[in-house]
Length: 253
Image (tube, rainbow, N blue to C red; front, side, top):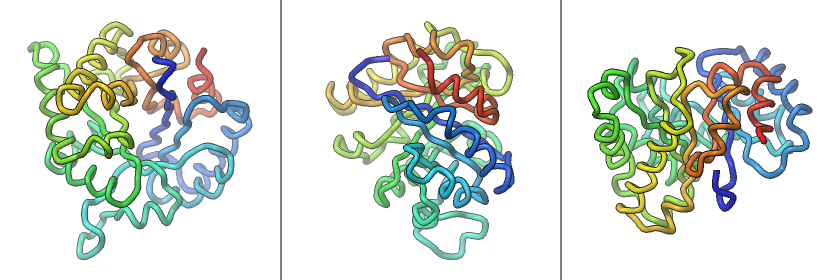
C-alpha cells in the first residue's frame, strides 16, 4: 500500500442474499466499520438487493456497487441492466469483467471495454477485473494474458478518465479455491499492471491508479497483502458474506 493512494475494500456478494438477507447483512456491518474514515468501503450485492442495501447504507460512508452492467442505455436487451438503472438504485461503483463473467457468460476484452466506456460516460466508477487461470500461469503466460486484458479494457479511455478507474487483479486459480497468491506474487502482478498503465499513459496516471487484489482475501492474509507497495485494496468474495470477517478485512492494520 502506498500512503498516497486511498485503500479501497469491496465486498462482492455474487449470487447470494435476498433483499431481506442483504439488508440484514449490511445493517450488521455498519456498526462494525463505523469508525473507519481513511479508506473506501464498497458493497456489491446482487441486482435485486441494490435498492435495499442502498437505503440501509445511506449516509454511512459505505458505497454501493453493482456486479455488472450493459453497454446500451436502454432497449430490447432482455435480462440486462443499464447504467441509469444502477445509478437510480444508488450505485457509485460497478464491477466489470469479473472472471466468473468471462468464464460462464462469454465476457471478452471487447465487451469489458464497452461496459467500461459506458460506466465512465454515465458517471459510475468502474472496478475492472483482470487475471490469469491456473493453466495460463503454469504455462508462463500470466503477464501476456493480463497485458492483453489491460490493453483491451482500456482502449479509448483517456488519462483524465483513468482517474476514476480501479483495477482488480484476480488470479482465477485463487478464487473460491482457498488458494492465495503470496503477497510477493500478487505484488509482482500489480507492479506489472502499473508499468503497463504507465507505458500507455504516464507516470502520474500509473501512480494514482488503485489496484485491488481479488484472490481469496481473508482477515488472516489481508495485512500482509496490504503491506505490499502496489496493492491498494481487496475485492473480497466469500469473506464479505460474514460481517465480522469483512469488517476485519476493512480494518486491516
